[in-house]
Length: 216
Image (cartoon, rainbow, N blue to C red; front, side, top):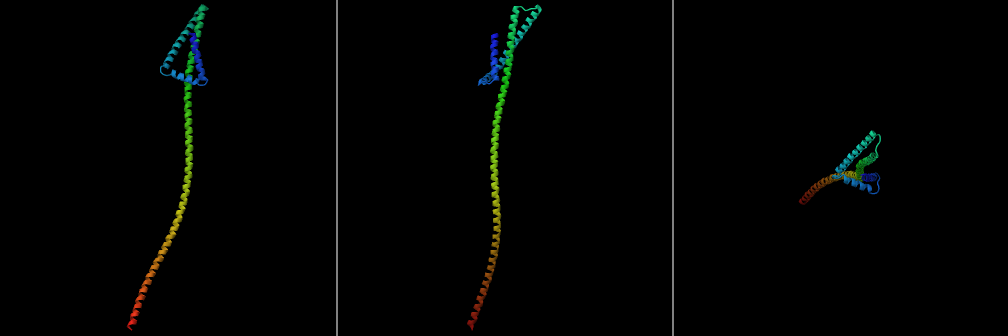
């Protein structure tokens, strides 16, 4: 029994050491092994073993107290009682250390698993943050590009507005010129009509004169 307890204690010390100190891939191997132990019926089995060891631990403590009480009543302990007392004390000490280390290993595994999950989340958050920063930079570049394009379009719009104003002024001047030309054409047409009427009158007078000359 004592050899078995020493072996279990040494194994627990090794597991606790590899959980505390990262030596190559050994910590990951120990973590995966403990994860497997906590799957399925593992927790129930571990609790059963721990409960049995606790009962045996209490049994050894009771035997230690009985032997001490017997020695106190007799004033001294017999060699057999001394051997039994030391054996029970050694086994109780080994079981106590074994249970304590088992509890520490379980807590260390629990908090290391939490720490690993937190680090993975932090890593994912950093990747998301970098992605957001990259998207933000891209949006900023697009915004700057759009701002430059808007400025260019505004300048072109201003130029087009000025050209439209110039064309409007030129159009108004041409309209005035056309109106003046139309008025001049109307005046010329009226003058031509008057001249035509005068020509007809003169032609009629000429014919009348010729008629009169022929009659004489």
